[in-house]
Structure formats: structure tokens, C-alpha cells
Length: 195
Figure 1 (cartoon, rainbow, N blue to C red):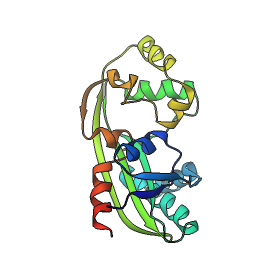
Figure 2 (cartoon, rainbow, N blue to C red):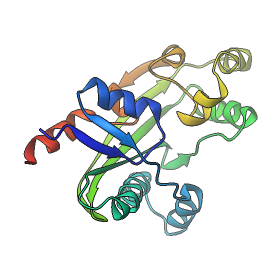
Figure 3 (tube, rainbow, N blue to C red):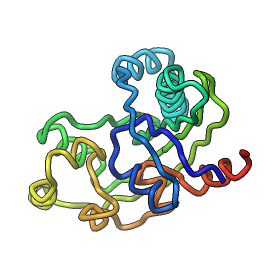
């Protein structure tokens, strides 16, 4: 199996998942304008899956154009609430509004990954998990948010399934690595096919 890859993301949790699975990675963020790409895709009535796949591919392709011959992994995750994308918060007020929208409801977390070389996609995969949030009071939601550091809150969406966020949910269906943003088993399976 190939043991080295470039990760086109600043995500510490994605880096940690790769390293825990014996895949060394160099981090080179793609710095694509995710919001304008999402906006454009939404105008075209793209599904959350298509948006997630497109963003993962764009990230991988952009970085792999600069790193000739290297394998580059792009990844993207979106929250799908009844077909509508819930974006990352940019402040604590937005984070609270997102939790209020998810409160007591089932939503899907979609994670897409793409491996590119020389600016072209070689492989991609999308996985979906379902999460049902408990019905909580505003005070409980605010209390949860007060325990989350800014850099964690803005980097990993609104909840940390690997940490304090687990208690927000009454039911979690799907792969935990997918929920954290990287379906690593499928990545390993693909890397195993490469020489």
C-alpha cells in the first residue's frame, strides 16, 4: 500500500485519522473559495452529494497541479438537512442558529474524498452518515457551545463527534471516520490497489 500522500486540507482531525492508519501526509491546503463554489453549485440545483464531491475534487486537483507525480487527497464534508446544505459557522451566533435548526431532527453528514495526480482525479468516494439530534433547550445548546474552542468550532462544523459533541445525539448511524470528515477504510482500499 502507498504510505505517503499530500492532504489538501488544514484539518487536523483528517491528518490524525490518516496517521492513525499508517498513512503519512504532508499538508498543503488548496485555499479554494469554497463559499463561492457552493453558491454557484446551489444556483444550479446541485445536491449536497454533488457539492461535497465537487469540492473534494477541486481541492485535490488544484494542489496536484503543483505537485507533479504526487498523490493528493482532497476531502469535503457537508451537513444535509432535508436536502438543504447547512454551512460551517463563522461566529458563535451562527453556530447557535445551526444547532437550533438541527435540534431534535435527523440530518445527514456527507463526506467525499478524491485522490488526484497531475491535476486529474484518479478516484473518488462519497459516504453518508445519519445523525439524530436530541431535543435540547437553548440553555443546553449554549452550554455545549461554551465548552468548544473557536478553532475547533469553525474547523469541524458545529459538533465534535469525537469529543463533547457525542452527547448531542440520540442516534448515530454510519462510520465515525465519515462523520469526522474522512472515510479512511475506502481510502486504504484504493491505496492498496496502487503500486
